[in-house]
Structure formats: C-alpha cells, structure tokens
Length: 303
Ligand SMILES: C[S@@+](CC[C@H](N)C(=O)[O-])C[C@H]1O[C@@H](n2cnc3c(N)ncnc32)[C@H](O)[C@@H]1O
Image (cartoon, rainbow, N blue to C red):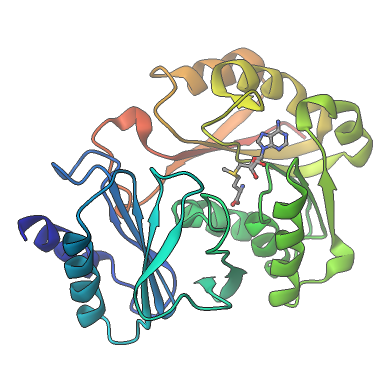
C-alpha cells in the first residue's frame, strides 16, 4: 500500500491540468525504492501502466482503482506487461479504447495499444518537440529516426517549410503520415523515407541541404544502433547535410554511455559548431544517475 501511495503522490504532482498527455510516474530512474519496474503515462481518458517485471494482479488492480478514483475523466486503466513476450496490453479498468490519442501542446498523435512494445508516442521528448516548434519556422528539416514523426508534426505546426522523415520502420512512418493527417498538416511539405540510415548517407546528401537536423536515435537497438559505434559515424556526416548557419538537435538517452561521451564526441567531430544549449527532460522523469537523464544538444554552425 505504501508503494501505491508513493505513486499516487507523484501522479498528483505531475497530473495534467489541461487534460493533455503526461508522464505520471517514472520509476525506471531509480529514485523510488522498489518501484524501478513501474512507469505510468496519462493520455486523454486513458492511463497506461508499463510494468517491467511481473507483479501480483491484486496489487495492480488496487493501483488501477486508485488512479481512476483520482481522475474521473479516465475511462480506461491499462497495463502493458513489458517483461512478457510480445509486451501484451490488458485493460484493468474499462475497455481499451479503439482510437486512443496522445495530446501535447494542442497536437494529436495516434497511439497503438495492440502492437509491440512502444505505443507510438514518447512523452519524455516533450521538451524536444517544444524546442523544434520554437526554431522550425521557414526551415527545411531532416528528422532522423523519425518513428511516428512527432517532431515533424510539431515542426509543421510551427510553419516549417519542409520536413523529410527518415526511419527504417515503414509501419512507424505510415503511422507518422497518419499523425500529420490528424493535425491537418500540409502533407505536401512532409516526406517519408523508409531506409536504414547508415546505408543511405548518399541519399541524405542528395535530399539536403537542410537548415535543421533533428536526430533522436534509440538508446540501443540490436545492430541498427549502438551509441558508441553509431554516434561518431553520424556526427562526422551530419555537417555535410547542413546548409551554412544550419542547426543540429541531438537527443541522447539511456544508461549506455560513459560520462562526457557526447561532449567529447561533439568536440571531436563538430569542432566548428557552437553549442547553443543542452536541454534536459523535466521533473516528470527523475533519474538518480545523472548520466541517464534524457538530453538534447542544440548546436549551430557558422553561416
Ligand atoms: C527512439 S525512436 C525515435 C523516436 C522519435 N524521434 C519520436 O519523435 O518519437 C527510434 C527509431 O529509430 C529507428 N531506427 C533505429 N535504428 C535505425 C537505423 N539504423 N536507420 C533508420 N532508423 C533506425 C527505429 O525504427 C525507431 O523508429
């Protein structure tokens, strides 16, 4: 019961006042003893508990009941069993909605509760999308590791001139196209390129030059992305795809990197770039180990 009270106290702290998507609880950062396996997100009408180890069903049901009592606008509390094969999703209260949506800064993103481990939207990149919106107007943008294209939707809502979305997952990009439609984005200004990035450097050069490149790779994904190997390859190449005065937004997360890794790589491979700022995810994503905090490096090249 004490654990549930800890979760509820955090959820109250991070509850959305405008009904938008929010992370209510983040235990993976090791700031709450015994709750390292629990992450909870709120979307309009829906709460999703992500569970990274098996727990007793009674405990889960009690948690779901309490979460729904605290927020009467929630019609469904679901749990995704991340430790289990295929990451099955189960409704604990109500029924899984047929067209669930994430909503952030007035923009809508489709969620997919039925398939795979990621449900289509990463709340921890809210600060990145806000930054892109601040800087997108009039720009031609390359969105690398685009997934469901949330950066593209945010950029076009802020009058970006053009966005090229690149990801090796065609189904993620299809969902990305749908996210553009959901937000009445101008689809003539968005393109979707389904390729393995590290085999497509020539194609990126041909599609450029770009005024802004957003680069938000996974922390680690099989042979497709390993931070220590792939970041240096990428950093060496990115400046060649930029126009003079171009900008980079490099998103880094996960516990796989030694301290100062990105700072050292940036100094080594992008010596001419000026670092405008290093932004970090907000208080909804507490991390005990500062190396694990999700960061975004915003860099600008000389004109
Ligand atoms: C963390 S997600 C990106 C999140 C996304 N930027 C967003 O705004 O929601 C990582 C994505 O990188 C893609 N990916 C991983 N390695 C890749 C590679 N070598 N080439 C192209 N895409 C890759 C995956 O398919 C996945 O969609």
